[in-house]
Image (tube, rainbow, N blue to C red):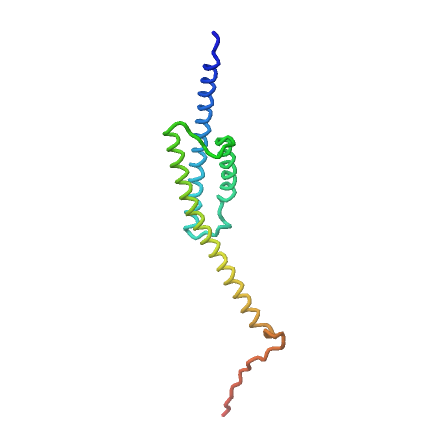
Length: 157
């Protein structure tokens, strides 16, 4: 049995759509992993852990690169990501909105962690400056600083 050109095109379109659906489902799975990872990082940041000590950073960066590549592949060189299946499209949009919310929170928490780290560094630097100033024989001008000398009177009876 031979296929007409129209039938072959229709079959190719269905196969392409199924392949596209599989890529979209894979993308949704990837987004779910990213959301979970970012939520875990946000929880650790909420506890006050410094951003430099977070174990999720490398994995988050690796997954973000895969996400970018996958979106580019799904878009197929177009500026839009078309999903024919309405339910699949709604799932994708829902996940993208959840990821955006998690990333917005992540950005706020990371900025706060960086500011806290900067405050800790400044406090340490100030303590070091004060300690150096207390033992240094030189003043701010570079000249020998006049030291306050404690003089007391002693009474001997």
